[in-house]
Length: 123
Image (cartoon, rainbow, N blue to C red; front, side, top):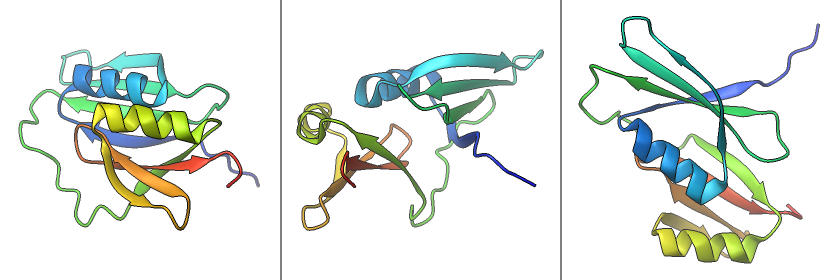
């Protein structure tokens, strides 16, 4: 029996704001979308260049309050081929929330507060 990772989910409050963030900060592009027949939800599947693994953004029409992320110890991790350029971009976007120079990594946060670990190519 074999299993393959397909996608992870993030529930978000503002679909357009999140789509813009993931495109600008990580270069993720929309691969497909599913909308509820009654308009109650939209699922958007994003993919990064060179990886079939997807991030599913779930927007719920009736959700108005921010999601409770707890201690936010759960995160996504992405690897970049140009760590310094990525760091410069994320500084410009103002989304760096934690840096660990000793480990050679840092974290950014999306519009809903989810953390994303940024790793250099050689990690």
